[in-house]
Length: 615
Picture 1 (cartoon, rainbow, N blue to C red):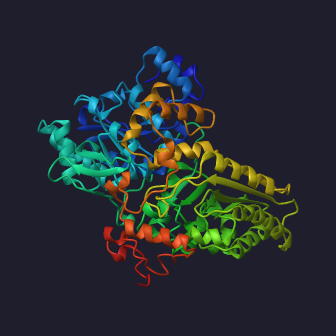
Picture 2 (picture 1 turned 90 degrees about the horizontal axis):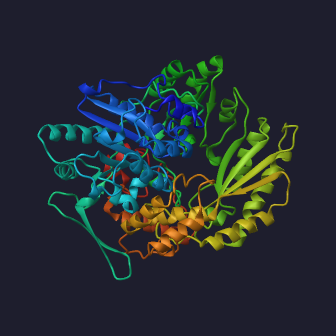
Picture 3 (picture 1 turned 30 degrees about the vertical axis):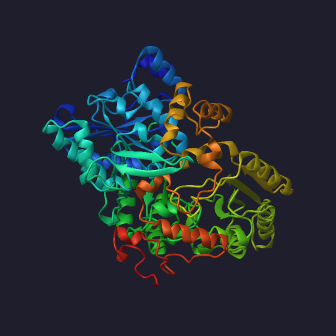
């Protein structure tokens, strides 16, 4: 645990002090396995992550397992730790992470990879898994980035592919059993890969490459190790563990609110969206379960806001029943209800009234593209009329600020599509004045434009990303088209998006570059003040990596992709069909309208995946 002098010498000592209400303390002498669960970013972000809250609670249900929290220390604390020779410690006990049985990372964003290596180094552990003997913790990775774990595969002992509520306890339970028998780490990893579905152990596969640099094959080294690792899902969310008491931080976090997970998966199939594919099939919680969990969390935390979380909350089939049940007591308690992921084609005045029942605020929509042609290409399935109707509802309900999310660099994009972004924002301003009973102050429409990054397990996984120069030129061009002071224009850094694409689409040959980046002090690359494009490109060049090979190259249909070792349930043939439909500017209906045969029902049967859909 950190000393008083160390805590006094850094900003936000509450990040490290521990002792929060709700933390779980156990007698370490009475547990069979200790698990350090790391969110490789700042405390404020990690403590806001619902997945971390869930898995922390899941593991601690077992009397003989103690899961503790670990976060990346901020720069000032890291400097003090290195100067004083203090290793990275777990939050609850203050014990060195090096002494645990497991060190698990949740991998939410590729730009956190350098933080992962820094955590390993601060813990006093070799970076490469092959250099860590049986005295070191078993290093596990999970989360969305685990669907292409190859760029960081050499640093991990195993990956959880899919949802961890059932899989992670199975891994720990197997470890305890084999530890009691005196098994080695290598024996445990082989047994885990053979017997626990969803476990991917990179060291158990040989990877070969073609002369053109593409992947040739993944070959298991041992009999019984799966040729392809299929993701795990929780079939019944009502029976799934959900934390009804959480650790309460002493400092302000990104999400100081109740996060109520309503359902998993998405019925829409936007062709750029990785989450919409890898989290299939759709599974809903019942309103009865959600109402009970919400009330319990409120009583245990006192938070004044409930956020209903999902990829598209308005696609929850019993949303009105749920919100009615919540409002029965949230209005009286002055608890704000937040619906953060509403679609413009399912937005209603009734929902607007519920969202604004306690506190008025701005509202956000995501048209993603400026023209209907390009929205059809990406299968967004919303129209300008949908947006104007929804904006009119918001303006008529007292909203004066609307934020619109777009992307540039999408496949088949033209400058006419970029013109459409500014035109759609202007039309939204005009809708404000065309709406009866609009607010007295002038409207403020903010357009936020991110750069398209091709992601694994999407129909656009074969696409090339625009070059940095092209993306920057498009960003500047959009700025020239925005001439109304009522429209505020922001855009993402194209250089960050390029590095993100390299890491998202990369393979194991990126490992030396990541090690070199760590050696040169890279960390917190998701934060603007610490990201350096020039340094990243220098590191890649020194490691002999051509970033264009990964980010700016269109892939062939039959190419073996680095993530083909993973089976996310959605078939590669379905993704290719969707890509062809994109180039034909043809849309695909939602899963509830018609089953398009993506393959996700293989994970649980048709009854788990939109049972009322037409075949």
